[in-house]
Amino acid sequence: MVREAARRLGEFSPAELADAVPVKTWRQRRQAMTYVQDFVRRGEMVRIAPGRYRYRPLRPRRSAMDVIWHLVRSNRRFDLDDIERLSGAKRVTVQEYIGYLVRAGFVKREGRGRYRLVKDPGPKVPVNTGEGKRARLGRAAKGERPKVKASA
Image 1: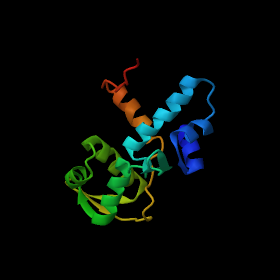
Image 2 (image 1 turned 60 degrees about the horizontal axis):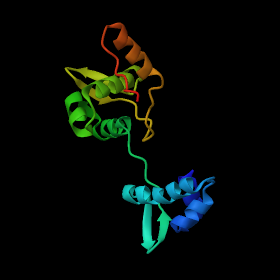
Image 3 (image 1 turned 30 degrees about the horizontal axis):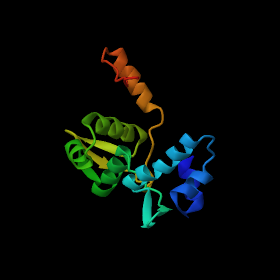
Image 4 (image 1 turned 90 degrees about the horizontal axis):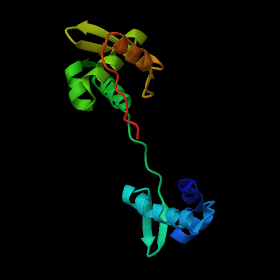
């Protein structure tokens, strides 16, 4: 709500931003004004003058799959260890995604952990839809404990 108002206004003061956000109480208005400090800390808003700010949308962070796919395309022939080290992703993530690429026909296994890119559809990341859920269910069936987020 505050982000959309900042995007709409472009350049604003905290009071102008609070006026642009639909609030009902003084407390909500004050909270909307303090959001500016959080956005500035994150780099989503930039101070351009005393009391004046400009909204600057953040670029989305690349996912592990994006990084792995970029490394696969740039190396053409690769090793799981290299992809794991260069991407910073967990070993199981690299194994699951490379396994998907093998099953989808983009990558071919050459033996002993070596792989080769055989079909390059371009920079758009081939997405493994639904495979993650099946893998989690498979691990749960094997008796591995599923990772559960703690609720408050």
